[in-house]
Image 1 (cartoon, rainbow, N blue to C red):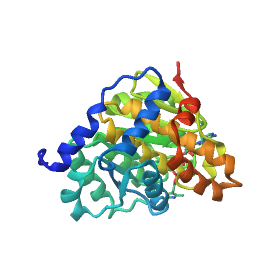
Image 2: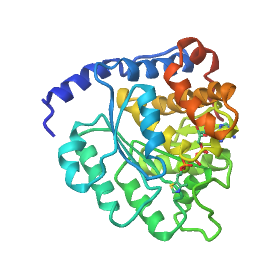
Image 3: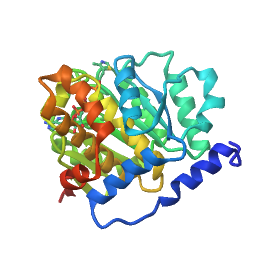
Length: 294
Ligand SMILES: Nc1ncnc2c1ncn2[C@@H]1O[C@H](COP(=O)(O)OP(=O)(O)O)[C@@H](O)[C@H]1O
Ligand SMILES: Cc1ncsc1CCOP(=O)(O)O
Ligand SMILES: [Mg+2]
């Protein structure tokens, strides 16, 4: 990567706040949203994501102030990936044809010192998918975010006949030790979503208790929150633990506010996007609920 590209110099300036210390999680979460919104150019997030999620992922990133680009052909990666602020890889509709592009993009992101985030959708659905997820893990993602079943599957390392699919059969808290172990093994941040979103770097563990159960009734909300993590990590790449917890909390708050106007999953999908776009400082400072988990 040419580190002297205008794009890179601008990004360095935008991330000058990286390393800033905050008195509370709520202030930190608000600061992350502000960094994304107020960057002189919106953080550019390359998304190699599943067909189901593309629309919601792109709209959630836009409503947070980031710039999504669903660019996944292997031919485009050498030109495009070095220009992005973060890469998002999601295996939801994985095929053998897509896997080389995912691996290439992860390698180029690493060479270019760009953070990248993995969503191991339905990790245990097949041995092909699990093997792919484990291979991607060896390419050192900055953050992995899955539901309880997905994180347990990565930890156990063998596809399970009882595994159902994209939806979790476990609570996030069932996967805390698995998440810590994965974080230590792969030297990354691991997040487990659920009623309480768990975030660990292998030593520290926090729980973000925002969101509403109805989020589980909208397809691709997990994919979308992983994309938001990528946007938050893009603006503070040296603080991926903090950025991940902040993104999960902010997304949950958008869900809480969206639910106030929603009649069900269909309208929550719309109100979630509106709420994220309109989220103000007061709501974030009042609602962020992140605490240590012992
Ligand atoms: N019971 C719940 N209460 C509140 N928020 C939830 C609950 N379950 C999931 N969420 C939220 O829904 C979003 C998607 O999480 P989840 O459903 O676990 O992911 P996935 O769709 O990948 O299985 C996350 O923001 C998570 O915090
Ligand atoms: C239903 C489905 N099938 C393959 S990918 C996908 C979307 C999963 O989205 P999420 O993990 O966010 O619920
Ligand atoms: Mg998921």
